[in-house]
Amino acid sequence: MHHGDQKKFTNQKNRLNRLKNFEKRGFYCYFTNPKELEELKANPEKVQAIFRNLMLERFRRWLNEIAEKIPSGIRIILSPGNDDSKEIDKIMESSKNPLRKTMEKMD
Image (cartoon, rainbow, N blue to C red; front, side, top):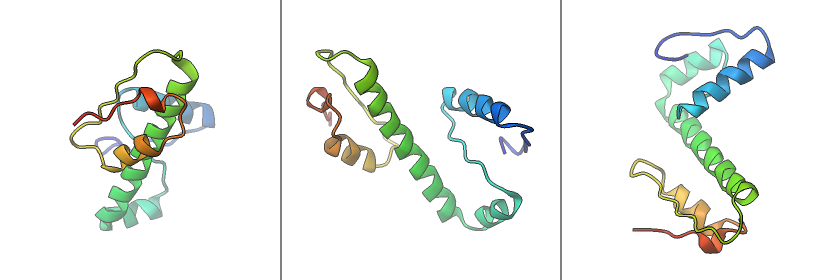
């Protein structure tokens, strides 16, 4: 569902392409079924939990990509937004990422 629209995917390739397109634009995608959709409409707390988990997973993935793609010795500054969960800070602080020493928490 995107702005009230529903989309059914005929194959996995189309679904993954659409997912990548949305993620590039900063959206968080969650695939569900009609029954769960009705449950989520009735329970905003579940929606928030799903969103939080998607956000944290993406951040973990970004940290891994930094380690894989950015050469050592390059200074990395991560600046979570004011609407990001405080759990982002915890992930940064506890990261076993080899670039951890180059990351700074800025207040």
